[in-house]
Structures are given as C-alpha cells and as structure tokens.
Amino acid sequence: MIVDCAVYEDGSRQAGDLKLHEAYEAAAGHGRFVWVGLHEPTPDEFDSVAREFNLHELAVEDAIKAHQRPKLEVYGDSVFLVLKTVIYIEATSDVETGEIMAFVGPEFIVTVRHGQHTDLHPIRQRLEERSDLLRCGPGAVLHAVVDRVVDDYEPVVEAIDQDVEEVERAVFSDERSQPTEQIYKLQREVLELHRATAPLVEPLARLARGEFDFVNDELKAYFRDVYDHIVRENEQVEAFRDLLHSVLEANLAQVSVRQNDDMRKISAWVAILAVPTMVAGIYGMNFEHMPELKWRYGYPMALMLMLVICAALHRYFKRVGWL
Image (cartoon, rainbow, N blue to C red; front, side, top):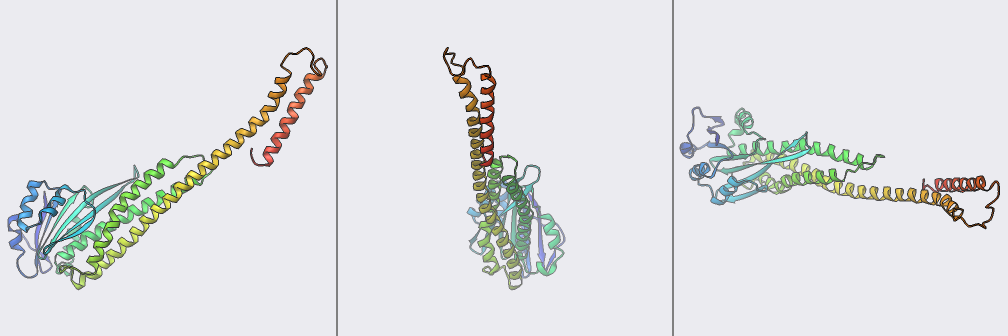
C-alpha cells in the first residue's frame, strides 16, 4: 500500500526509514514536512493514514472508492485535490483513465494513486534534486504532481487530433466508407478526456491565485504555468467536441447525397429499360391482327427502335448528371 514515506527538511530528504506512526511527529518543526505515497489502498490499510494525519472522513471515502471527478475541497486547514490521469492506447485508439488524490496540509502531503499509469516515483526522484522547490513545502510536491498529470494530457490530445483528422478525410473522401461508428467512438473518447480537463480548470485557477497557505509567492508562478496549460488543452478538447459534431452532421449529409445520387442512377436505368420492356410487351400479346406483325423487317426494326430510344435516354441522363 505505502509506496514511499519520507520526511523532508530544508529541501532535503532525511535519511533512514520513516514509519507511518512516526510521520506526523517527524514533520513537526519549521521547514519540515512529510510526503506519504500510496497505491490503491484498502479501507483498513488507509485507516491508519487517516488517523495519523486526521483526514476528513468524506475525503477518505472518496480516496478509497475512487471514480471521482476532478475537484478541490477544503477541510479545515487541509485541502483534498482529485486529479484524473489519462493515457492513450495506440492499438485500440482508446483513452484510459486513472486517478490521483492528494491530501495537503501545512506539514504533510498524502498522495493516493489509482491505476497503473502516471507513476509518482520518478516525480519524487526529480523533485528531490530540486532543493530550492522542496523548501517551499508540500505545495511544491503538489505542483510537481499536478504538472506531471497535465503534461500527460498533451500526447493524448495530439493523438486524438490525428484521429479527428483521419475521420475528416474519411468523410470527405471519394471512397464509400462508413465512418459513423468511428465518429461516435471518437466522441466517447473526447468526452472521457473532457471529464478530466474541464473540471480541473477552476481548482488550478484557485491554486494559481495562491488562495491557500501552502502556495507561497514563489510557487504561484509555477501553478500559473500549469493553469495556462490546462486551459489550452481544455480549449482543444472542447474544439474536438464541436468539430466531431460538425463532422458527424457532414457525414450524414454525405450519406444522404450519395443515396440521392444512387436513386437517380437507379431511376435513370429503370427509365431506359422500360422502353424495350414496353415495346416487347406490346408485341408479345399474340393478337392475330397487329400493325406490322407480318412485315419482314418488323423484328429488326423493333430492335432498332428499342436501341435508338435507349441510347437517346442514356445520353440525356448523362447530360443532366444522373448517370
């Protein structure tokens, strides 16, 4: 459950293994804080963490059950932030999501990860090389986590952008493809990504404004940078939604146009074939007294008449664009 647990003082990680029941006391003191990282804890496993840091029961319930929308909630002097992680599966063109929850207090940060992607261990290693940021306390850790999650949105947005372009080419190509199912599937993936980006804009705006004590003046600029990224990516995702709606309408219009074109061609051929059918039907009634029935050249002249009329109709329908 506990991936890592360490105490940091004056921008440096303190040596030695830190036990969970010693974490809160170890963080006491100026310039010290604890970072506890967990992965998919059970209720029993997380209970000890909740008691150690006096976490609110509602936030604890959300952290255990997961499947939450991105949000930021304040409980006393601590903050609970939910982030959605996303990854693009190239083989299936699917967007898979996970979650990272962060409990941030004046002297601690507890991160809870659900899902196999967006490992936080590399973030911890890189951050431990930046003592200047670690001196800013738990807010620096929260920024590093949020920055990584938002950066991971970018390749997903680029991949979906390519999928949207492919769908556009399929809709307006001369080939008689049916990309309707692909458009609907892509709309679902865009919606999944939108659920991760859109609700995160407002929480990051609050962090960028420095509404919380753990975000000092030095960290405001870093959070503003992340906020700019999420706003830009969310605008792209919303543009995808509008574009896919337009592409779907264009595809339906294309289908209607092709169906009308097919009906015109069918009607033209029916009209052409109706002429020999009519002539053959008249002279196939087997009455004894019919005009030109015993004429030597009647049969070839009837065939010639059919051919001439059919050729004239074919030329007319080609000229008006029905064939």
